[in-house]
Length: 439
Image: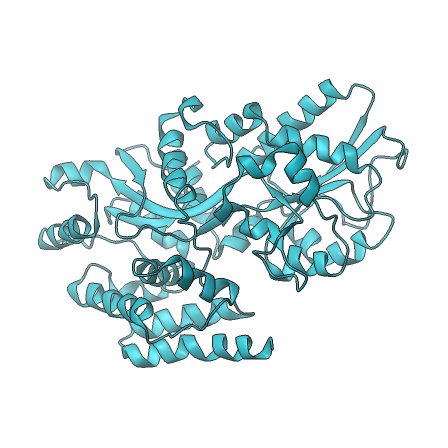
């Protein structure tokens, strides 16, 4: 994959990355393939997912299907590759019909899994999760987006999905540039800021960024997390208490972001850039540090051929943006639920979890020391650092509908010289309006 291909395939949001990963691969959702399906006879498993062919997760699911066929030789597997958009737009209608598959990949969140669970379209998997021991393999923080309450809001007691992989934001370093400029790799915020100052003194803008996309907003939330407690995250994301946008968490974030802009650690000109531009800054060695999601990892692995690089937890915070990934759900109208459970169990097995890791993704239940690919092991170790210490704090735009645009606009306001108070007020208004509307 060339750098041009790298730029072309980097998309504007985490969700868009998933949405575009399988475009033009399949027929419309309403068309059910597979021919004769012996409905409910325990002889057919109908399975849908939207992962791009030959991607890390698609390869893992292919292997899981092959394993399922070995352990269920008398069962026919009817697999259909859908697009993210097909499932996202039509799931409610399809799952409320006799066309529902037995198991499918579905997007996490209150507006997706939570909504369908509240509408009674998804099977409550709580007892199955406990019986199969899946809850012992998935950390509390990674399972929040799989569990919902009666309102369809995440973090409840009932499991409606089973995630197999995780996603999170971490630091990527150009090791060669650190070595060339005799700068130590940072281990805490103090040494991180010292590295930023040394690169700037050498005439190098240290941090890759993109103001017209999710990376800049992710930075702002990550800085807030440096001062955030578990209860603050719960209050912000799960509405368990009041959030003061002028409190120490968000005030520190805005002031630090502004300070780093003024010192030239970020480039103010990055205000109009997209995520693809940010990754290109890192790949082309114009910026020695990129803090971004593990969804960039595969592209970096392919496209960086002329320097040594590494990944690690961002050293300035014990919490980061992240969660369990999208998950398997079993529709209420699925005809062979036991077979669906058996398939999910295989995706949670050591063999498939290890494969997810070797392919460059983040398995939730793999033994890290079993991963032979050193870069993948580095990535998984970083994720485990957060997963094992309640460090996954979700994403800043999750709490309110349309909030993604608010965060992006507020960050651009800050990069264009906006005052801290106005930025904080900009973030507070739609959040507080939505929280008030819930009562």
